Length: 129
Image (cartoon, rainbow, N blue to C red):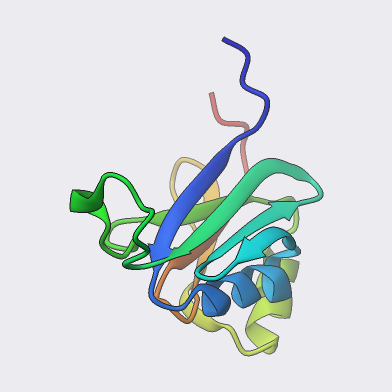
């Protein structure tokens, strides 16, 4: 199998709120959109993030069509976490966790978008094995 790209699709009540958060703070751009749907891409990562309005009739399987968020972290690895934290928090993003470093060398911070999705930035202070 050859995978040509990767995407994560998340159901949210307000598609525009999460899309705007991702474009304003993390540099994603809109690849395509329609009523209740937006697909975002990032110029430096092979990842698309797709937001679907919760309750969209085309979502399958219907029994798992609830909103995303519980226990979910959208994680982006960066090289300049402290600079990015300062920039994003100064722009008014809701801070969930200010920068802290885990004993295993993972430095991270977290923000919440308008739907309560948690976006986490990570910088490795040591090379993970």
